[in-house]
Image (tube, rainbow, N blue to C red; front, side):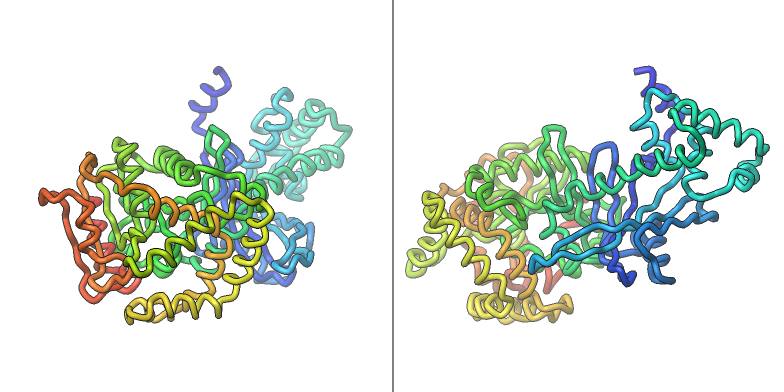
Length: 502
């Protein structure tokens, strides 16, 4: 308690707990960056180097001239050093390779690492500062000039650090500090290996629009979510459906214009890289996803916040609003999909997704089917054929899929989503098709509906049949919009959401 009280009164810089890093090809080409917190072990993936000063500094250094494994450079104008270390990775074909991870090491961050491993040593701030300068490659005389103290003062501080850390001299001192500093690599890498699909999605398709955040709840649960929009924007939570990345591509300009801070929790079963046996044994994905969303709201937002249910996420959002009304101020059903096909299609469509769920009763069969499903959907050409067939009656949705509105065709993005989300998609369809419709009459929140007039998935009339008929529901019909109204009519949709959130 005394230690914490002292730290609170000393006003520790929050950046002292943050590791800024970036990954590069050996050629220096930037791949992605991140901000990892050594306190709560969270990681935010940053795909646009302009979003963070430290990551931008690493990228500019890598682009300027050749870097190699072990490169360590002092940047005097910012009082920090850059350190590039090698790490091993495996590509999509399973072939190994080597890349570089650059780390930004500040005086504050360095001090936190030294305290972490040498808490009983009780180094003074001046001793940690001198040790930091030695690791950065600064001679003691230069360090003395930088800090406006005498050379003998720096020597005394070095001697004090040696005694407290039981080192024989400067070289031994630096060697020990460098070994402890390597902990930065393990912290920045802690959750990335298990979230590679989501990280690639953020990097390859959502760069500049959304960042990926990975953190751990106090319960030990790993929470993953995309976040975008101005940091001081009005927070909104979106419960996604199976094709959600298409409405996030190009969303940054709308969020900025309407001052919204959008959080999109990645629900269990979606963009997963866990073992197949783990997915097989996972039950209650819907409930797990609901609890994750609650934890993200409590962690990131000042409740109550606006809740959006998109596509298949609509029924899930209704359930969440019924169970935790204290967390939300308003519920918006945006292009909701009730997955209730016409009678002539019910047997075919309903049977397919219910069958996927039933297959889980046979572990071996499930593995075989899941493997083929992933192979099938990993082909963007296959996805293009399926989606063009599925949305054949909606010209506006076909234009969205072809990239008319966001500049990039959506088929490769869907291929990645489908192939890594088979469990979540199957559970969503099973939940919507087999469960009784949620009782919206029990909702304690104001309710709005935003729907495209040409949405081929669920007509507005079917949605309204499930909602209270007392005139309390605010309806917003987007003329000429289809299922992807948030992409084709983004300004109109997000403006309505912003007005509702306000």
